[in-house]
Length: 458
Ligand code: C2O
Ligand code: CU
Ligand code: CU
Image (cartoon, rainbow, N blue to C red; front, side, top):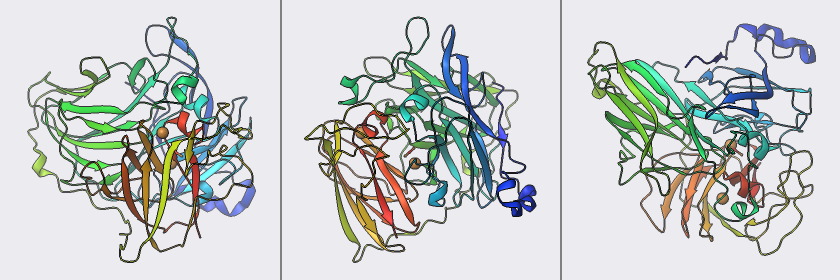
């Protein structure tokens, strides 16, 4: 597939920055949020939202430790704000309306600029009119390259997400109140990079880095790989050498909305042989979400030629004397009117954190769920009191899952913890990034109906 890909992070334009307000992100191409049309199934689906009129949001490339300038222009009639999921960047660039910036109005531009401290697979999506804009397409992948090349022959980015279409391939309402009060409303067209089961050619016998990102608003994917020697090298951005076992058809990997997994794959040596990324959907046989096809003569490389990815500069929590904070996620005991300024509301509250429905990202006068001191270590106990699964996401900080009442948790740094039914998980973190950090479920219907708060680091 030929897609327009932006190369960002050039430092060449840095000289122009002294001009203050006049120097709007010189040298950086604007990301223009705009209506789009695209054939997801049989006929063009109109009313999509992307960064071009006829293509998915591009992969945004940056490099660890190098500045990225991402001016975002809004040409929609609604408000927006762009969030860079998983990147540990300054709070003012985090893209959460009212919490870190004002929403971006029609015809306005917001100049995002930051230097990613970590390499890995991340993604971007709006955090205002979230349901409307994400469900209609505005979710893209960010690749932050290691400062040093880790030695793959090629890469394949796979952006997994559903769309909810009618028989004419036009959008159905993105959510139902029934879904919002339960597991969420599921799409009926499963795509990878906006295509149904696309095939990508990679050189036979070569080493491919497969970056899989679940950018769906609802679905928890159950994934496994078939047809190649492979291993998991990173989870939610960060390297996890030999920590996560390879999934299988019977024990697939649960990847919740917002989560990412990177595989190192040795392509088969025979031309035309394939590697399938398969998903198990309820009530259906395993299906290939995307397929890699071995092309040309084999270059005969092997996984063991790869060195482990370099670790990201993450602070290790110190558990002695770490203060404990408790969070309970569940249904809300009372309705309550959601308030969300210019950023959209579903009109209900179904969910709560610590038995309080959060009245929308934009509610004035609502305090933080916890106040953490910069530089200190903390343990957060996350309790799921509901029968539904919740991918709980914390902005701006990375955390380490410590233990669960239900399962062994691999030791890996993450920004999104998938809480199972009735699960209690303790996570640890160092509060090393000051600011107000959104803390919410990444099932957008839950996020928008009570399950969003924020944690303050001062
Ligand atoms: Cu992926 Cu609050 O975000
Ligand atoms: Cu985020
Ligand atoms: Cu949830």
